Length: 193
Image (cartoon, rainbow, N blue to C red; front, side):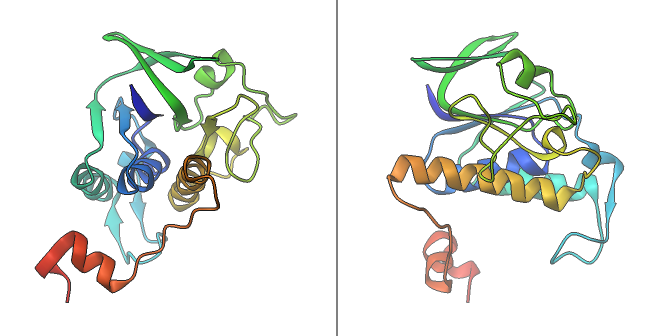
């Protein structure tokens, strides 16, 4: 059983995975590699002047891999079900359970609907500021929660918001992921000066 299961490997899903794994939660990402990021060239992602979406995605994958995320590449989730024992996602390979699920499937809202998440009048998944849906411990991010306001950096922020709320619940107090140079030196050693 993982702590966090993330459905989708684009900016939202990988951002959530980065924050949860970096902070000690056992994290699995299911990714069909159908993210819109492959179609993008980004000139508007803060800190990056110009990058091909596929290259940015490769860098994001490498980063989560460095923190021990279990990436289930080319694995489609067909169902999400929440009950008192946790949340179960179903793939062709079987069932996987966790305490939390982050849905990051772009504009495809089918899994959220199947899990019983509430929708807004605009027919997007209804979430609060932490990206939590009406189903406890199920989060929705990115294009599935926005009517036509789709952008990679917004999606990454949604993933981070979901992850920080999960970490807040796990720690029992407001959690902030803020590193200082000494933290980086501890993690990456001689690579940081």
